[in-house]
Amino acid sequence: MTLISVLYALSGYAHAAIALDRTRIVFNGDASSMSVNIQNHNKQLPYLAQAWAEDAQGKKITSPLTILPPLQRVEPGAKSQVKLQLTNEAARGLPQDRESLFFFNLREIPPKSNKPNTLQIALQTKIKIFYRPKAIVIKDYGDPFQKGITIERKGNKLVVNNPTPYNVTIAYASNSEKGKALGGFEPIMIAPKSSADYKGDEKALGSTPVLTYINDFGGRPKLVFGCSGSQCKVTSNING
Image 1 (cartoon, rainbow, N blue to C red):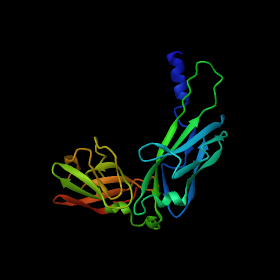
Image 2 (spheres, rainbow, N blue to C red):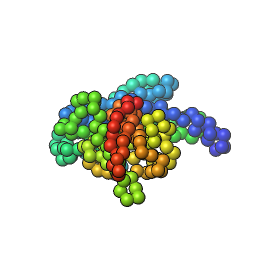
Image 3 (cartoon, helix red, strand yellow):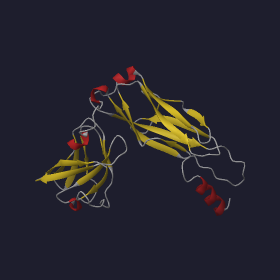
Image 4 (spheres, helix red, strand yellow):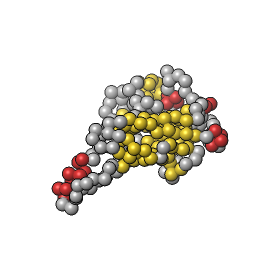
């Protein structure tokens, strides 16, 4: 196959045909199942959509979380759904005082090409599933739980503390409310009731750190901190 043929094929599949309607899944424990929407954005060709779940270590699972159907055909331009199901028995085996992390995978399988010298690529989407037990299901988002995050200096490093029962994903860091995202910062996800090292230039954060987090809806609000000594606490939350 010539290089031109390869590049042409790659350009044809640069964007996923089968797409999800969200960037993360929150599975509330007061329900035994939920559905996510998918769509085939290719207007000419049908695609197969293969879906499965993984545990926090990336191992494929069928329990306690099941994905149905595992394989389906989606017609050109059509929409469909994938169901996530969690049995009550399995749910009782998960922690009830904090979220559990899983992953949802969606792989598109293109129809076989009848053209010679064509390279076909099956694109795959992988997003987080947060199983949120009934006891901590959020009814009112007016007071974001992420405001409980603190920053602490321990020796020669900064530590981000998450005392909440929820996973918190920090996407960006800056040194002021209107400051640009700091280069060199590595996004982190802090598990419930745990801590994670800040990965970036600590000095660049200054005395008024701002951390941008990803909320349940894919939005990116900002946490503005005020520091005193080795401790920094949230002073305000700015919607984003």
